[in-house]
Length: 79
Image (tube, rainbow, N blue to C red; front, side, top):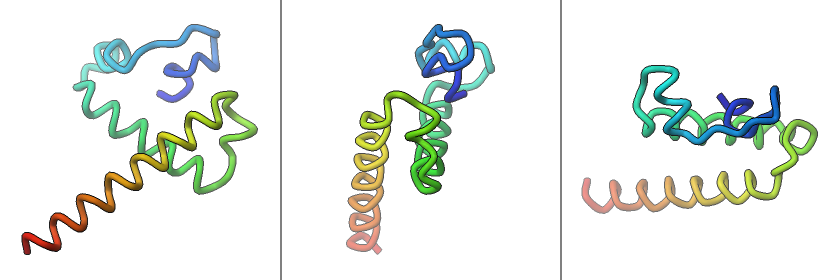
């Protein structure tokens, strides 16, 4: 999915909606899977060698991590 999104195989980038339509799932699910994959790549430090948009990926991963921390704090306050 990441290779389709960033156009690594054929040089043609696709948006999340188009990938979701091709796979027959929701675009929200594809977005979740993309963020999960990016976190794993970032965790294993292999983004730099695989993807040219490494800085953008790092920003996406950082924003997603911050979002998760905010959600955890909100759940802690509720529960």
